[in-house]
Length: 170
Image (cartoon, rainbow, N blue to C red; front, top):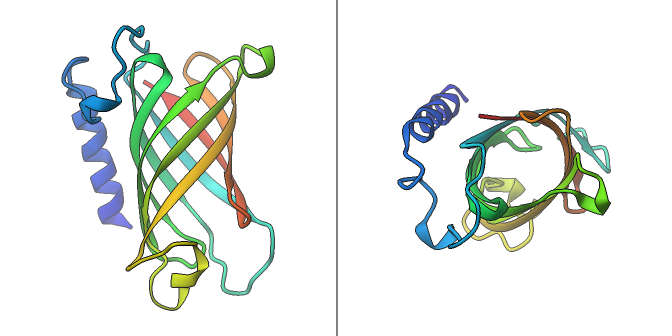
């Protein structure tokens, strides 16, 4: 886990030093003609995940994520976490944030899709379409913007769980 935290901190330092035109997301994700984001990135921390069913094998899930904010509400990022069975895991993803959900200025939806690595060995069948530890993933997150920099979010993890997280834009 220490190596994962170091990698996340290094990535944060790289993103914070990148120029607006140089970013770290693939160029095809950057829409043309959209207004620039007023934030460079977002750091997310999740200390707790609630599983829909109890299992004696479940472990605490802790997640750290770093997003690069792109024009037009798009984003890309990486998350490092311990999965429900205590295995180190990661997700590389891209997504879209939709603000003013249901006409509420502080409510938003974030939809991300990507590739997850984790759930190996005897846990390989705990996620669908897992091949050699790699599987596709789609995560809708519902959030509330507390102020311009801070938010709280609920991430729906399929039929398995809901993750509670805090986000800090920078």
